[in-house]
Image (cartoon, rainbow, N blue to C red):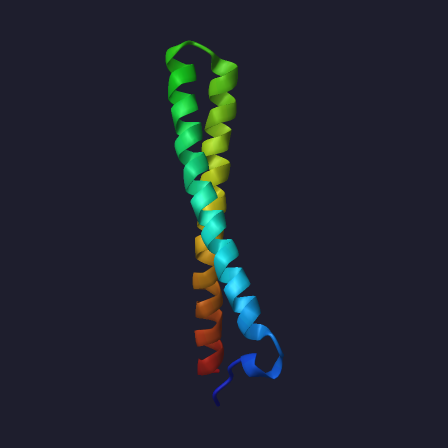
Length: 88
């Protein structure tokens, strides 16, 4: 049995795919930039002896890393689920 979602049944689904792809690209770019900025602030605040700012910058690095992983992994997970549905 070949189970696959019928993406052609909805009008405008092509536009939706373009919008989602653009949003994922923007999310990944912003997440990577935030990792870089937070890492720089973390390094500067640690070397200057400011533990409060270092803790906030460290949290920023981990949050941005989590956002990048979720945004990139979401597409992979959805493709895996579609592939799994084809095998049922």
